[in-house]
Image (cartoon, rainbow, N blue to C red; front, side, top):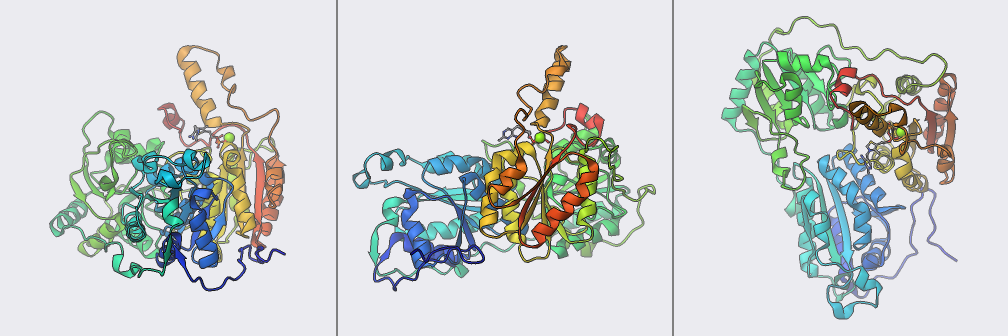
Length: 597
Ligand SMILES: Cc1ncc(C[n+]2csc(CCOP(=O)(O)OP(=O)(O)O)c2C)c(N)n1
Ligand SMILES: [Mg+2]
């Protein structure tokens, strides 16, 4: 009989073992993971870490950390990414030697670009060739596995002894959680894991190796920034990568109000400022609206709070002309830049760089500022797009957004992400956890895994986790949902299904127009039809609930309400909504400038 079955909460409880007489190398590593307080390790198993796997189950009893079995390594890392986006803290992801790491790479890249901490553990077959099992240990042993991900991790290591492994894990945690945060990768030699060490060596206490406390801004630079902002006639604040903390959110509001500054936000970096606030400006981000570009041009002082692509935002306002506004930037992002990944974007002109986390700068600036009358001309209050329920025919992405908003109603919710065909200004935010933003690296297929990880972190918070995913994104990552069902993690997934990798239809459209060729062919090699995948069935096949396909606006409210009820009773629900191919009209001029992914 197998006693080690899933319990009522989906947690696999191992049969109890006797106290071990002997310890093994991987026992020390597992105890260090517990010492680091990693709550979960999402994983897909592999022989290269069978030693560590045994230690997690039979020594730690599958608690602290608890395993989350995933059907693909990309999901394991994406789950950790989604989890950290909510909590700000890392959880682990364990991937098999070389092949598992290869599967995980895109998700690691996404976490890197999103500046999110993920603690990736992996393994190699025995570095000592004399200890390798025939064939399999040879194909799963590679020289310098870290090289696969070194260009988009903060740090990697392959420790050669138990003592070195303990230090390596401590250092990795510090590196991942020190801003700018990011993924790290530790490779544990199978022979080291499987070495018998007898008695446990004393293991270091994580309390003595904590990440450094946050740096304060240079007082002179801070005073100069405060003076510039105080004297500005038309200050503009660009809220980029900021924290999910409520106190920080309040301080950002206080800063904007003290200065009468207009605030631009970017849907891909999540909720940073209340969308209904009088000072909230028009949609900005990848495809800034004409109105946002105009404000950037009219501003005399711009404060960037770790805005992704500040150079691009300034160029959108000023074109080829020198930027006329004074630029203050609060960011530590320069510390993450390397020679491989150009996710650092263009080099912006910065008159005053406060090299601190953006919310630290806000907290330090506030006491130096006196409330002043706004210098901007009177503006109408920010309005959201009016609900557009369509004409009763096809469902538009905006109609879907409106119907979803209506169905969610006044419940606290968290929009884990919106697909490309989703205008950033359609979702009202009033709390830092109301929207989490994107995946960072533009990796299609990340959505389902990130949704599961965020939902895991939101479990028990009373906040309804809602992910709106493109059909292409959903189909690439769909089996991530099995992990949510298995571990009883409630989650609502709404698929904005245009039966297409539609973003790229737009690119083919553009090419055809530029070259005078038939635009009518833009769908070829893009449409996901004939057959149309049944997305509800993909959910049901994994033990979730599937709704749809919903093809008419009048069918939407009931399906969404039923799906929400399913999630509120602990389920995983997928609603397949067939939307008209087309993007929400963010701003046609922005699209024409070459926007979209
Ligand atoms: C791994 C990966 N492959 C391909 C792409 C290129 N790409 C960008 S958007 C996109 C289409 C995504 O389709 P879907 O999720 O259905 O969104 P839609 O554009 O249809 O709203 C593709 C294929 C990518 N960004 N990442
Ligand atoms: Mg699509």
